[in-house]
Image 1 (cartoon, rainbow, N blue to C red):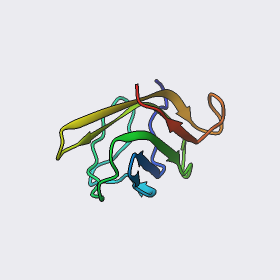
Image 2: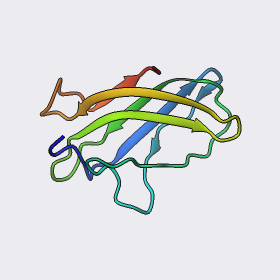
Image 3: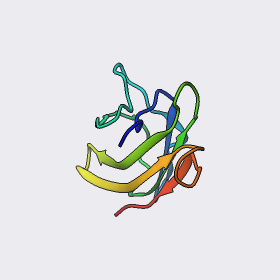
Amino acid sequence: MKYAGTDSDIYITLFGTRGNSGERLLDNAIDNFERGHTDVFTLEMRDIGEIQKVRIKNQYRGKDPGWFLVDITVHQEETDEEWTFPCSRWLAYDEDDGRVDRILDPS
């Protein structure tokens, strides 16, 4: 999708059966959230149980801050469990429904 990438800060919160992760900035040593790319992040946290939903938020700053998100996959390394949260929506004030914050349910 044209202009789908962003340089804005992106935050995630994972909600599980035993609590939540708190809001976490998604960042690593590479240029993240570029169009057509899959980004991988490692988040260390206490056991929050089976993941039930995810909140993803675009801080919406900088030039062309809108971002199109296809999906989020969460992999729990210790148990090898995996959850996929489909989105296929914009997180942008000037696209789609104008929302920059979404709650996603697993597929």
